Image 1 (spheres, rainbow over the protein chains, first blue to last red):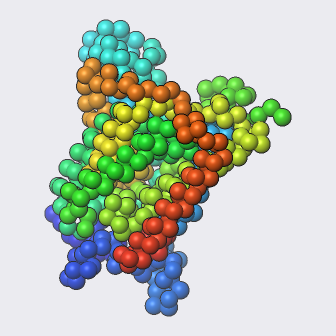
Image 2 (cartoon, rainbow over the protein chains, first blue to last red):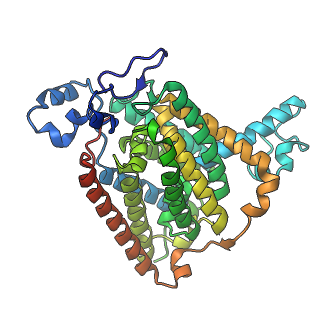
Image 3 (cartoon, one colour):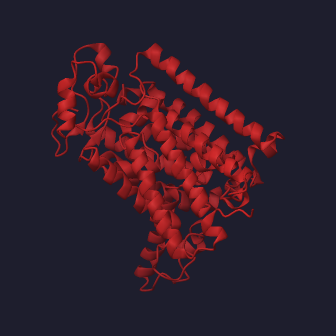
Length: 237
Length: 204
């Protein structure tokens, strides 16, 4: 992204510069990016883009989606073969939330994580996530969560994509984007807990093992996404 | 030959090698998600508005590759498929949860895994998404007494599609492959109609 829109915020949002043509504004992240596409890199006109790319001045293009899909599938297969478990993301946040609830109340009472008479232990849902007596957060999914942070960061740095920014559509505002992201997270958490997992634990892991509920979940996610996307389309188009 | 995988279960790994492996798998997971462009909400939003079908392509390709690998390695006796994690099915709460999750996805334009990656790459909107997600989990916890009955309803156990459909595993696996290929073809038709760039040419 060459010239992000200047706003009165300490952080520059990662939006394409506004363009006058109506067709341009209908496609966010499109025209400003065209020059760096690998298909177009050989088109002659983008020799300069290639030079900048080689000189490490521009973010590298993303992987081809099918190549990325094969890589992701092999990571998931490796998880099956090595650990007998799949991938997960939302489970770690759930454990962290249960742990935080227990820890907060226990500390307020001057106790430890082993404190018995707490909301988190009386609530059957959180109780299953804090069955240990210690402060330990030792858990498969939490270690994976930390790994995802590291892996995402390393990849972004190597591809020159790590940048403090806000990812948003061309006609959104910083305040609306951050508000909707927060609301979206809240709503998604509710759905993920009800469904016993998110895109990683249900759609990917459950999908590959042919679990019936995971396939139902996956189709429901697409249905819910398309139904809701209509109402927030102005944020992205 | 006795199956030798899943290694951690067959060889009865202790907790240290298992969690070390969880962290390593997480690194690979995060790396690939970022490479796919999923550390940016604009890529993910493309799925709903038809300007970038990376979400569908990456997800279905991954499912097909892992599924073929798992059942293929199971068929040759390398892995004991019965010892691989299989999600329990609670049909109605999972459909309702999926609808709600999908709505949250479209509102926030992240799912939890992609939001973690986006946080790691400096996206502040992903950070607030994760904050909202944390609060949403707490909301679910506080609503638990009212939700427990529904959460446990329509339980079908650890059931897989071949059992429900009464078809051999191989047939269902092939059907999933065909479904994925059909979906890919559809996205390419849409790409042409909508004048999108070819797959893989999208840069941040």
